[in-house]
Structure formats: C-alpha cells, structure tokens
Length: 235
Ligand SMILES: Nc1ncnc2c1ncn2[C@@H]1O[C@H](COP(=O)(O)OP(=O)(O)OP(=O)(O)O)[C@@H](O)[C@H]1O
Image 1 (tube, helix red, strand yellow):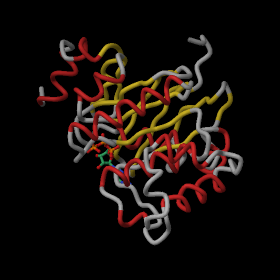
Image 2 (tube, rainbow, N blue to C red):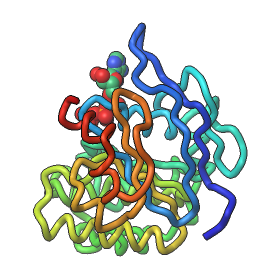
Image 3 (cartoon, protein in one colour):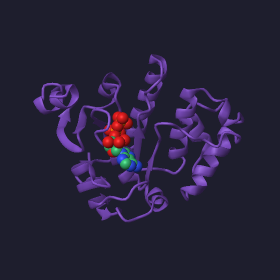
C-alpha cells in the first residue's frame, strides 16, 4: 500500500445555523483501501460524505486529494479529479434506460472514454441495459447508482448506506463488488449501519458520535471502546 494518502481530512467542520454537526474530522484514506464510517443516527456520517463530495461546503478545515486542497472546488470539478459517490436513495433518470443513465454520468464526469459495457458487467446489469431505470428493483437501482459513479472513473468512491433494505444474497453481491473495486485501486469510504456487512469488507472503521471522531481502528476493537459504547447506547 502506498504511503501517500489519496485523501486527507484536516480539521474538517460543518455547522448548520448554530448547530455544529461535524467538528475536527481528521483521517486519511489510501488508494485501494476500504474505510467504514459508522455512528448512531445523526452523528454526521452523511454530512461527511457531502463535504468530501462537494455537495456541501465545509465551514473550516481542509480536504486534500492527491495532496491538493479541493474543499473549495464545486462538485463537478471533484468528480473530474476522481471523487464520486452513491446516494442513500438512488435517483436515476427513470424514463431513460440503464445504459443511457450510465452514458450521461460518464459524460458529466468527463470520462467519455469509459467502457460502458465494462461498467454494466461490473454492476451485473448487462441484461437490463435496455430497460428503463424506473423498472429496476431496489437492489438494481442501487447497483445502477454505483455504476453511474463508476462511469466517471473514480479513484475515491463514497458509498452512503447501500445495504439498507437488501436481502443477504444482494448484500453479498454488493460486498463482493466493493472488494473487487478496491482491488483495482479505488479507495472507498463506506457509510453503513450494517456492521456484519462492514466487517466483511473492511478492518478499519471510523466511529462518529455527535459530529466528533470517537474511534479509529478495527471494527472488533470499536465494540470495546467505552466512548463508542456510550454513543450507541446513550451513555
Ligand atoms: N441541511 C441540513 N440542515 C440542518 N441540519 C442538518 C442538515 N443536514 C443534516 N442536518 C443535521 O446534521 C446532523 C447530522 O446529520 P447526518 O445526516 O450527517 O447524520 P448521519 O450520521 O448520516 O445520520 P443517519 O445515520 O441517520 O443517516 C443531524 O442532526 C441532522 O439533523
């Protein structure tokens, strides 16, 4: 593994009005690494993803990608650099086909040379390529959302609660896909409440509580950390 982090967060914070929802977030991610981001509801996980992807602007701190600050860049510029994400609730263009959805994403990402058939194969939607996206199952819509991100040739992929509502076989398929992407060198930050799922794909997690980092390390050890236990069961 390279010693140069692909992503480095340095004192990142976010406030909504008077409410500080993220405070002093500091961690790094290496190429090809999967890092889990966990914490109780409202602890700031999605906000962290929104700051890194550029959907929201940080109030303080720095986001270094490849050693360069990106915290002031708009989302599309970050996509062009190689940062992209999936959403908790996918919102494909429902009337368009699966293939068209991926083609549009590739174009938006400035990655017109991306092999759309390869993306379709990665997300296992080759047979549905000509179907309207609105006809897909929940699992397939989540895969398409991943495919749209993959179509922009990301080097850092931010995955926001992909496991919710999926059955064990579907979760298994997603876990294998994420591991395959990491093996290709893509770095992943995976926000997830399903700890068994996370345990299958990563050994390093960051635990947030009330917007602050409570723990960083192996998932198993997090369960023995008193701050983590207090955050999850309310002290
Ligand atoms: N646009 C917003 N305006 C005001 N408050 C917000 C906004 N977005 C999020 N919040 C608040 O910020 C806090 C963190 O929310 P966030 O969605 O990041 O938490 P989370 O850890 O992802 O939660 P969950 O696991 O429920 O998805 C919450 O208190 C939430 O109500």
